Image (tube, rainbow, N blue to C red; front, side, top):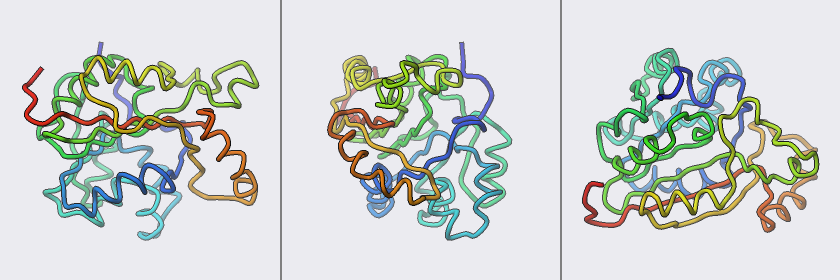
Length: 235
């Protein structure tokens, strides 16, 4: 079974700007390094283009446009299942291609592959993850983020608040299993608080709580970074 033909994440997924963590720690250094980058998933292209009209603002919140503005075309590509999302990206000059990663690896090998908030919408995770591994160059990094099923608010309400729109849920132990399955060592495994793209006073006042939840592994998002070993043969 392959993934349904919608963009990932789908249009009803909430939009976040995590520039204060995984983008700051991994995406921005990857851009500055001059290495090759693949982004799997366009996000909700239609809503971003509608809500963030200025180039500078769009660059801050929409990763495909950020890559377009900061990287040479030969250094990156954006992949998604949804042809309409890819067409919107291509219309802005973004290097983008329709691709079902469940069916085959990416057409090139990359030094960095970013897959943010995608895994919860994938039907065949085993094929998806194996193909991502095969798309990594030697010593390449696979940066994954997902919602955290043990987010403290979920535990308080005794239900996973995004269960209806997600095909599966994840906690940190799941990523240890993926590391073992793929044979890729873990560089980082942690939780962090993904924050809305437009901040508010309420968000600012909650920062001490978010910092505590990070330490307890109860923030709303998980980051897992896996690294391909050098000179590893194809699996």
